[in-house]
Image 1 (cartoon, one colour):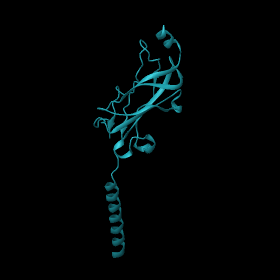
Image 2 (cartoon, one colour):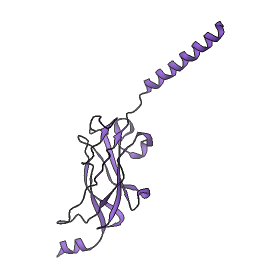
Image 3 (cartoon, one colour):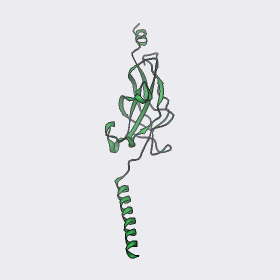
Image 4 (cartoon, one colour):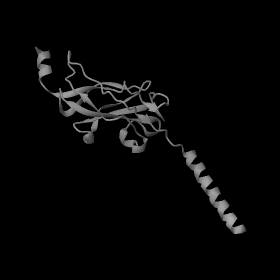
Length: 165
């Protein structure tokens, strides 16, 4: 009787927190799979433009993250929600999403997922992302220093060339 009441209560809907259909990559679409240093956060909402963080921040294993069932506040079971996952390299940015610049986030596409109660026999669906999150490489400071030296050398050469004329 309790299970029947739970499935009919129409509480907040849940989905499975996973990107198993589109594993996270490093640097490019054919780059290496994300490891335990790459963290993820799910975003969900009623509209594609109103996504907000849901569920825990969790790490990847071989490009996949799974953090159980996640409820979406304000959206009842048996309706659709929009979902997106972002990922970042925690080696430099840490495990808090607020510390990560927007250009250092890998993002999946925004997809719809059917929310359920998640109570047996009512299974929770996993978002079917078609675009993996591709985490951009962290620019190394030495690259910027070499670029500045190269610009300085080009400027010096122009100055010397003009002075000799």
